[in-house]
Image (cartoon, rainbow, N blue to C red; front, side):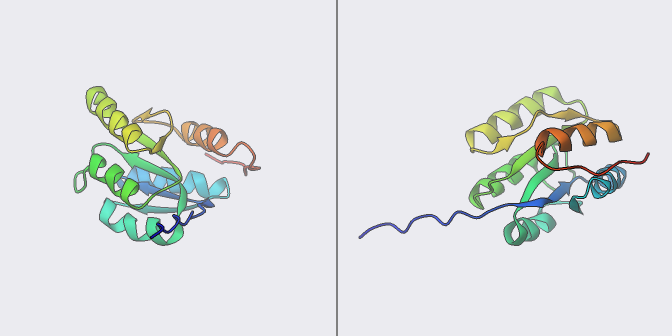
Amino acid sequence: MMAEPAIEIAVDPQLVVIIDDDVKVRQLITETLAQLDFRAESFEAAEQAFSVIETCHPSLIFLDVALLRSDAIDVLHGLRERRYKGAVQLMSGGRRLLLEAIERIGIRDGIRLLEPVSKPFSQETIVHIAQRFAPHKRLGKVQA
């Protein structure tokens, strides 16, 4: 009996998911990405985000490594189980050892990780991430 080939699911290049328990961070990222012509969906916890990730296949996920109601390692395992093909932008408030451990796990799980960013970060950081992540995309202008 032959194994069925895995179905390759395309990511939505316009959709970005933000998972962070800090409403101000979610708002900053969402508003900045909207000005850059991305669609952003933000969530306080991973459980809420997984339904969107499963059905809409975002191209990029911003993930806070120190979530209160979710564990970033569990999120990465969940992405692996869902065969997530986009990229993950880890965000950290300064817990370098934790961040390094999470990076190792993400790499081991085959998750495409972008260079982590430290909190707090500015709107310019988000613009820079968007430009690096989608260099082919013509980005809109951002107003502070």
